Amino acid sequence: DTGVSQDPRHKITKRGQNVTFRCDPISEHNRLYWYRQTLGQGPEFLTYFQNEAQLEKSRLLSDRFSAERPKGSFSTLEIQRTEQGDSAMYLCASSSRIEQFFGPGTRLTVL
Amino acid sequence: QKEVEQNSGPLSVPEGAIASLNCTYSDRGSQSFFWYRQYSGKSPELIMFIYSNGDKEDGRFTAQLNKASQYVSLLIRDSQPSDSATYLCAVDRGGNQFYFGTGTSLTVIP
Image 1 (cartoon, rainbow over the protein chains, first blue to last red):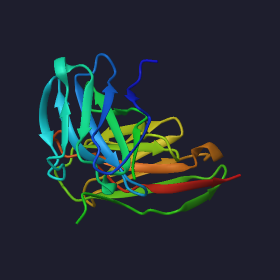
Image 2 (image 1 turned 60 degrees about the horizontal axis):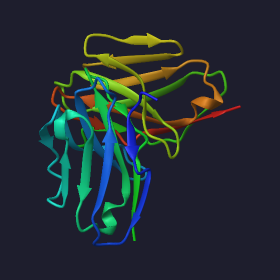
Image 3 (image 1 turned 45 degrees about the vertical axis):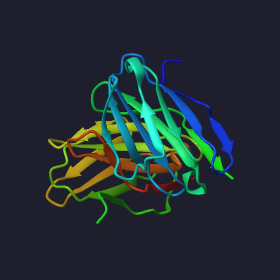
Image 4 (image 1 turned 90 degrees about the vertical axis):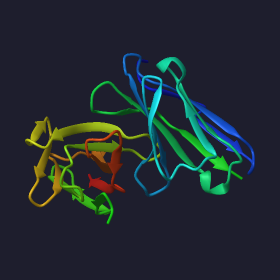
């Protein structure tokens, strides 16, 4: 499968715990995006990488969220001290030009 | 005002009919426009995209842009039950992020 992959697909955690998600983009794609989607809403932009550089972060992204993309390959998104409001689908997308291709997402449930 | 607005629906059409989906965008400088399909519980899947210079047809799908009125439409001809999904409109304003609408739910009735 040469598409975008994400791991884990589902994560259940207790409030206050830290969680980390991984995204493996399509191999030749140098651009990588993280989005968050809640029920009934469209994906909401979180952050963007071009190669290993994080070029843009949403103002909505609190300091509990951090993302990395070492060596410009896979990316991780960490949420510290999770809150119930963090429950959502976290989507990763990659692109080489303009169109973005999404991975299957990681569904986070914070109890 | 939201960056991208869509009628949430639901929109119901009979099988074989044309489904028409619309979205409006707020930034007149927006350059590229995308339609994604999202089945329940799945991630968005790109259907097609157009630039600010023209419309596009791909099989049963046609995307049209009205720059003067700042709206984008997606027409689905010969609608099939498998087309039942939520359709997301996204806009690229020329930066590094897409702005998505909330999506329109489409049901194709056999």
